[in-house]
Image: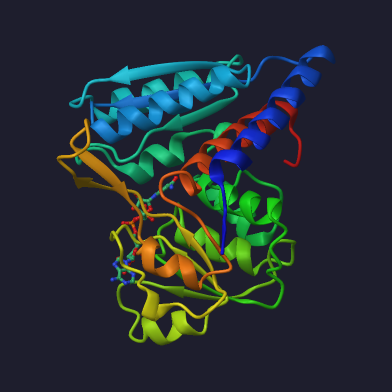
Length: 292
Ligand code: NAP
């Protein structure tokens, strides 16, 4: 069994981004600038945004954080997005999800200019992704593709089972794995809460991506020998032994699944770190117009 080390690979990805940003600037280009909007003060969202801002400075990007009150109106949030859309100095915009219940998430995502949508959630970017056209790719599936590429995992002709069909993880992951690319060219089964024979499907899988948000869901009896297992799950579970009072758990029963795998991602230290690397890559591409 080999660990797919998100720490190691994301460090390499970040170094490459840093060098490309320097090159771009030396050729007369501008410094990439990511603007993040955070509504309210959800603990996990605060942590994610702080990490994104820190990572921007690690690779020499400029970043701005716009903080809005939990009770901000949808109109005010839309006006903030419009200001960033028209600000020529801002290259990438992200709105940290989830948003408070009174705000229409879809309306907000659709308001971000597709050219600055570095999260890759706008319908224009999703549409391009489906057609295999250059686009911003949602950061988590993009990060997983970078991880598979780094370890030169042979995916062509393999059966991949993706558990979870969300617009930000599972569905784009299934599209990327099915595309005629390397990595890619998988035969993909996309599973969700109504899937009936999940265990049987998983037992046929060469690659499993678990993205459902249920700690320890994927158990050893659901995984065949030598499978590649990618754990996307991040759930905060109460843990008195931790200073923070919680531990981060993935969707895979790592201890028992890992011995059966050819490759597996740990949680933490796997997909989460790659997601940040992919977001920075999208922001760099927003400036250089590379691959877009
Ligand atoms: P989500 O929007 O809640 O979607 C969960 C998906 O899992 C849904 O499609 C749901 O099916 C499916 N599901 C739920 N229970 C299931 C079951 N028993 N069997 C099969 N499918 C089931 O979640 P998400 O935003 O995709 O996130 C999933 C997990 O990844 C969460 O833990 C989240 O924190 C984590 N995450 C991690 C990163 C990272 O950077 N590592 C990034 C994003 C998300 P239905 O569609 O039928 O409801």
